[in-house]
Length: 612
Image (spheres, rainbow, N blue to C red):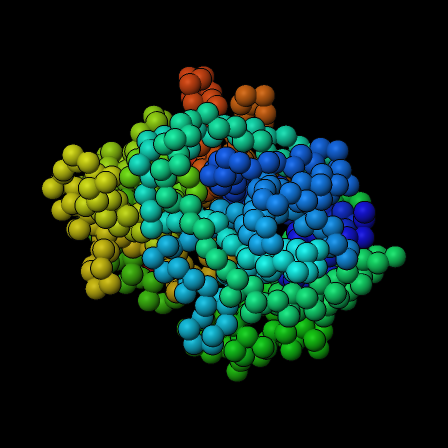
């Protein structure tokens, strides 16, 4: 059964029909090792298990023996007048679908696709539609096409039946009444021979209490399915034709959409789907994809036009095409990439002078889950579990480091904020990288006023401090200054390309300014490999935890570490908790030391130019 079109095949092909060939041929792709996608997958499996528990009469189709046996078992069971099946498999007209939950009541089928995507029950189906264009919103379209593809196949199998399509999703407008709900689901991971991860979820909680929960929303999407059906049918026919007999690659013209292609993987065997499509144009340097917000040029059409003309160098872009605020940044990038020089805006002097000492460089780590861990929380509501702060009392002083990390199974947000308030008080400028930290403090302010979460919590001083510190309303002032915005407006280095993420800015500065490596409080971050200076993030420690090699080098890794340390199977193992805590502290500390390094370099450079 190699020539069928599964719903995962359909999803990939809808993104780009050429990818269907790469998927069927087993080309390596970045999604296989994407920690964020793995985290979402784990949450999705737990949501799926919870959904099944809402249908105690359901029968699960086991597919260990392969699709043929699962299809045969499904066909036999669907001969019954009334039945509910979990993961039934249906093969019809070269289409293969595995339905999350299928209810058959006589001649009526309810097809239920379970997703971990958050849904706002107050908005209902209106959130699917773009009011201006009367079309389905881009972020919802893949989910609704998924249902439509399955409904189409089921109608072909049972042409006389009434088929209703549903999505079941966590409702972020509803809070749980169960404390520690997520601990009722034990998830274990295995790895299939084709490198895909598989998960088994066991329920160990109170089923009666679970049935009282209301935050899984069942949404009838039959209207949306009908709207999409013609396109889904036509697309499916095209994809299936490419799978018949000999596998055929559907050639899709290269475009700006290729920038994030998951098949752009450098493997020893050399199978790189992106490079197969782009050929020699993939190796042009500097590339048009390096440009800051390249996709917005010419109302979104210019880059595609240049690609069509095989003009994919950064220098193929004409200055007159660079307009508006983004255009100013783009002009700087092109000019100083040509010069291979860094750039400081002349007004940067006044900006740096306006910062009030002490300077507090802060970074937060948070956790959010489809299944909330604490009573009163909603799906995907954020738990703030860690902060790091480096404080400079004067321009030439050594930074003082303070930190907070929750390692207990409790709702930590108020303790998190109180400890930060105690650490930095009301004096000085708070420096962040992006508006994320402000959003978290705003969340905590709202949570402190939420009786379901706050319970008996009452701290007027924290409320006062949050009002003084964060931007709670549109017109509020705040003490926090976003270094990412400063970088975007006032600084550029060619090695950053079109990025202003701290993960790009730090190595651009660190690798090119050896004097930083000799500063006492920075020496521990200086490492070389084969004569090259290593990005401090890549040099972070990797240790063995519970039999596997672990590291924390980005936010998703921090989330997974926190989940395992506080909520997971290792939550009661002091040794493993200590190891995770050590990795988390080093990672979060590096984020704030990185901001300190960047600020120091800017300050030093402008001082040398006699601007400060």
